[in-house]
Length: 504
Ligand SMILES: Cc1ncc(COP(=O)(O)O)c(C=O)c1O
Image (cartoon, rainbow, N blue to C red; front, side, top):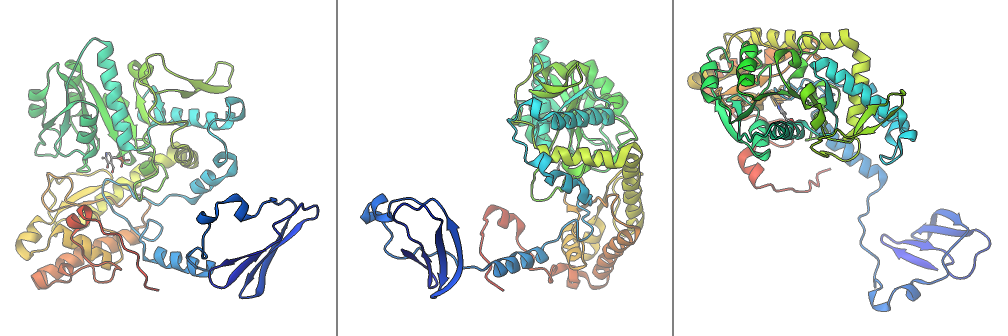
């Protein structure tokens, strides 16, 4: 019997009868044999016997015809249009787009880890459980916390988890609190998570040094406040100088301190959120610890807590048993599950590998070099770009094109687009919202001094071009060398048109 396939191909095989000997299948293309294979057991029915005649296809199915070679060429071509951390500097502030050691990916791809079924009993997964317990212990050591859940699948999921812990803590004390305080410079996920967690957002102002305005904070504090969410260093890249006073003031009204650890890269081995007075900390493993942070995932946002919150952590959690083996346990007053099984297990494995690879000294070096690089870039740009809060920064710096815009028409968006032509990914622009024409640059610790110098030169060149040519400067038309030129981004986000590009 043979079946016609599109493109003059035919599949032939004896489909009827009992087969005691292996049966030969042949795939022929335009009458010539292309491949064959044998099988020893075949069904006894014809297609006509199995499927009602009126449902049988009258003509061959129109399947797309693409050879493997063409397919590989297509995806390779697409990958060449892509910009990535493996290709060059990616100074996207607040995102920590650093280079990640390939050995972390190799570990995550190892069959011994990747092929384990999440439902396998603890007796078969002692290695996995030990690794997760070790990771939790290391994250607690880094943050100065007592225990952590590894379940949340991203920073924002960690934020929601932390807010649910906050709620459970106050409920257990017979309190109903409705407000959470957030500084004006906060990342957008903070107010979103507060709302999702069932609280109202109270925003506090920023002082002239870029920190939380203490008067504004004190005025907002009362016994209705469940807590404050802070990232330190802040999204301005500045260390919160008054953190001890802030912690004391919030604790005094019975509130908790939530640390958004997305900026942890800056403080590894230098200072611990627990010592600053924080009660709840989420970490973005996909920024600080080795998982590439592109395309929205996958991520992991473990939440570490101080002693008085451990009983509320999500469960089940991997634990070390008293006899030295590993198992699962759910805390007595757990808020319940946040993620199925082990969380985003392979992201956790990458983080464990990264931590083992660096050790305490290596992690300290990560933070020190990240901070050095950000301060160096800021120093190069001073005098050309505005520096809104000009004091030493941590792992990222926020500069502004406000004066350039006034004098030459060059906007932060133009700078970002022209940088693409010059071989760099853009920094974050227009964030934090409290800085006009903001450019938020996070060089990370993995870029070489040569790359940093080239990045600074490019940013200075763009400003010079605008000073010389004004509205006629190259930046106004940029990017001219990318597969897609400048788009109306607000419209593109709201009216997405996905098309298939057939160019070779
Ligand atoms: C300061 C800050 N907080 C929270 C988040 C949210 O993290 P995620 O994107 O993993 O949800 C980010 C992400 O960029 C961030 O920069």
